[in-house]
Length: 58
Image 1 (tube, helix red, strand yellow):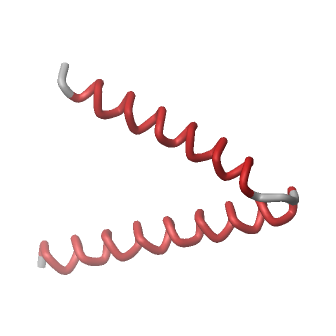
Image 2 (image 1 turned 180 degrees about the vertical axis):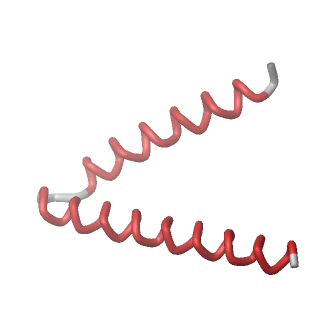
Image 3 (image 1 turned 135 degrees about the horizontal axis):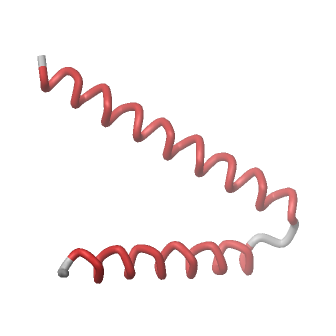
């Protein structure tokens, strides 16, 4: 299927991004805070998208 190429590319990008992030951050603690901030930002973005979808369905 055509979709599998997209998901494979997304997976490879995520893995390479994680490795690049580990290579750039000098301390383990700073990596944890960076990951925490990223997860919080992604959660906020998902919440905004869900709110927009709820308003669009009304």
